[in-house]
Length: 333
Ligand code: 2RA
Image (tube, rainbow, N blue to C red; front, side):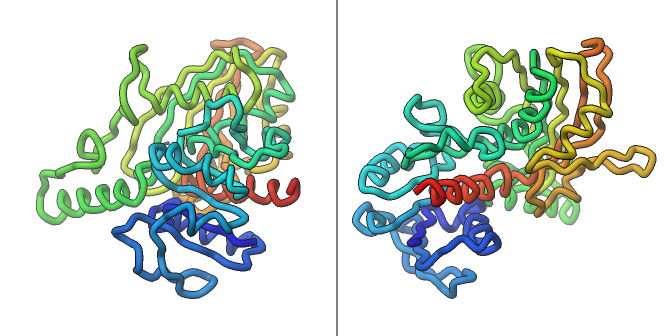
C-alpha cells in the first residue's frame, strides 16, 4: 500500500511511522507530509531516509491510505476531499469524531463500525485508553455510571509539551527556576494542572467532555452517565486514569479481574502484595493498557468497582489505534 503520514514531524506522526514498521504494515511506499516549514528536510525511517513534502491534494491523492496527525482545522480543511479522492483516511484530530457519518473507532470495541467508510476518526487518547477496559466490563456486568479522574502526561500536548516539561524541569533544578511556560496554562514541572483544553459553559473542560461524548459514541451508549476530571501531570508519556463504575449487575473484583485478563488490548497488573499495579514507567512503550488496583467500591454496593489504568498515550491513545483501524480497513477493503 502507498501510505502517507500527514503531520509526520510531530510526536504522533513519528510514532505512526514506528508503529507501521513494528506491525509490518504492508507499505510499498511511504510518503511523509508536514508544514511548509519542514518541507525539504529528511526524516530517517525504517524505509530509509524520506524527504518531507508540503501537503497538497495533488501530492496525496495517489495514496491508498493517509494517516492524519494534524490539527482539527487542517483535518477539517483537507480530510473529506482526500477521502472523496479515493484515499482511506484515518484522522487523529477531533474534527470528525462526533460527525454522524464518520465512525469513531477503537477496534477492540466497535471495529464493525468501520464498514465501507473511507474516513474514520481516531478518538482522543484518554477515551481510547478508557473504553478498551470499560467495554469488556460493560459486556460482563452492564454499565450504569462512570467517574474518571485522569493523570495525563505532557505527551498529550505533543512534542512541544514534552519539550516544555523537560526545559522547565532543567531550569528549576539546575538554575533554581522559575519555570516559564507557553504550551500549558501554568508551569507543569513540580506541579499538577486541573485544566486540559478550554473550559465549557458547564464548567467542565473540553478534554473532560471529550471523554464523555466519545465514550458514549464508541460504546453505543448515548445515555451513559459519565463524569471526568482531567489533570495534567509532569510525566512525559502515558495517561493514567482512576476509574469508578457502577454496574447493572453485581460485580466482584475477582470476576472483573478474570474478564479483564481475557480482554484484548488489556493487561492486568494487579498484585498489591508484590506492589504491582499500573504505572507510567511500566506502561511506556507498551501496546496494552495496564489495569490494576481492582477493588470493590462500597459507595455503589454490590455493583461498585474501582480500578486504575495506564495506557501509552502515543500508542493506544493515538498511533497504535490508528494503525489498528487501518489494518481493519485493509481487511475490509
Ligand atoms: C491531551 N488528550 O492529553 C489530549 C490531547 N491528546 O492533551
